[in-house]
Image 1 (cartoon, rainbow, N blue to C red):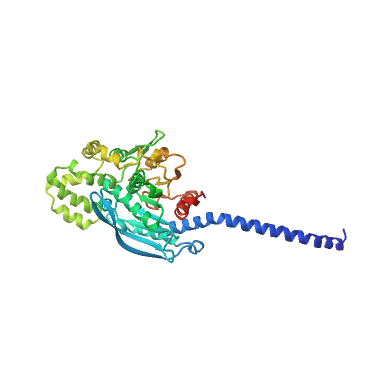
Image 2 (cartoon, rainbow, N blue to C red):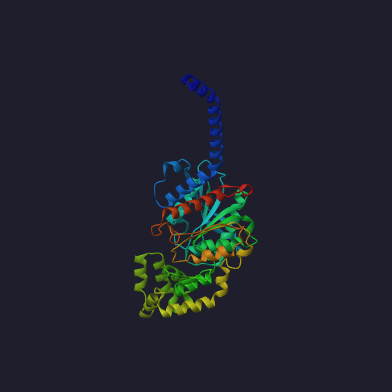
Amino acid sequence: MTPDAGHGASRLADPRRKTFYAILATALGILCLSAWPFTESHLQSIAVLRAVAGQRVPWIARDLTVSVTTEDFSFPIEATNRKQQVRARLYTPRNKPNAPAMVIFHGVHHLGIDEPRLMGFAAAMASCGIRVLTPELPDIKDYHVSQDSVRTIGESVKWFALQTGQPVGVMGLSFSGGLALVAAADPLYHPDFKFVFAVGSQDSMARVTQYYRTGSDVRPDGTIEVLPAHEYGPLVMEYEYLEDFIPAHDVGAVRAVLRAHLYEDTSAETEASTGLNEVQKRESLELMDATSPVTRAKIAVAIMKHNGELAGLSPLGRLQTLSTPVYLLHGEADNIIPSAETLWMASELPREDLKAMLVSPVLSHIDLDGPKPGAMDEWRLIHFFALIVRAAETPLSKARPL
């Protein structure tokens, strides 16, 4: 082929090449547009997780977040034969007053809705374009896992759904996650739950309290999860049922010591301890050692005595007919509520209702401080939170998997 001939062939190919690149560009554009919801939700997930961990949000994700306004207020709910005011905080993405809505319930902590990790997470979710309501649970705040909290959760979700005009997504941390599932199973509240996201939560309160006694929890496949319980778990149970552990006349004085210990208020604990007599001091030390045979025996008695009450605080037996989308997340090394509990919930939920389940080494209980996770572990957590962001943002009629 002569040079001129080759040059002529090149000229003939130019229109074809232009057509090819035009088709390729169009195809890439369509692909990018179709993949953008996937990409956006994952970048938002990274922004949330980085913000919660106190790390700098990458620039590529920072552009997808907005500033957030907060408002503290109270709203009325129906309690037993009376009206009750619930203290709450609303996180709203700036210039998006009608953004999709989500309710987040705090775990067992004396700071309630002022707990810094909760505030950080709520603000991070709101920065992704989601209105976040954090109602306070008075009993949970004072280390009581109770039926009143189930009612407050259900009524709070019902109230917020009424304000927004549609069901709302619900996230529950620690024991509140299990209680949120109990509330979602109640026909009175079920229509107001868009989905439930339970983090480090219980399936069976009786099984969790047995774990505090034995340091082990059986998994659905029959294997045993063995992990010494953190003192926090048994102490919460002892604080709840203190009358079952010590004589009635010692309860007031010893409860003050346990409360200060749970609040991590060293000076208050020291002050309360100085008022104890020798018997009460021995009782306090015994209660703070859940491994002692005496304390373990008393835990076993309390479990038997309150078995019916514990069942009322457990999703167990309610999940098979829940018909609400559920997302389950648990820390692999959780020694307050063992991860076997999430495996039980996953085994009981109908396949169509369990949208995602992850037991992650990135987490401990509800903190992002797991022992040296790998890159794939971090990616799985990012993807999981992307599913939550997507579920919160997407109207029920348009919900679709990533």
